[in-house]
Length: 202
Image (tube, rainbow, N blue to C red):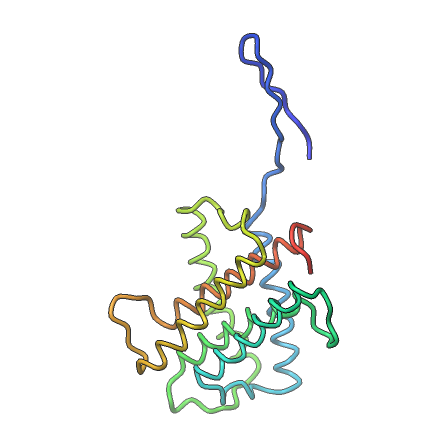
């Protein structure tokens, strides 16, 4: 971090000069890492995630978010995944949720790896488009958020998904399940970006 000096008549003000952030590039880099994990697991396990219903995906997301909360409190882990790994998992479960919503009931449970990759890319493009729109409107306010804030918002979105499922998938004025998945994906990617910058702990 460098400093610049601004002189107004007889008053000199020292301000921090913050390097410009390449958000789109950072976002894409985080997505590439998540996609790499998704494709490796697809090669190992096939598309076994196709059996998951919306409530099951919400449960998996809940487990991941609650574990990050526990790590934030204790900073101790007895299993392999750290907070960064759990955020990656939430990105991928969010994409899986979107894929499941987009597929018809007659779609086979086992999908070829190349088709699964195309489906992943298509849903991630939706999330990226939403990110760009919200960054335009809100001015990247997420960069000033705490990691705890991201996790709390993700938990809120998961509880909303559960409630929508309990309401047979209908809402009166609120956004649907897909919008909540997209928000979970983007909050998780923002957290990964800030971990990569060293702003948040891994």
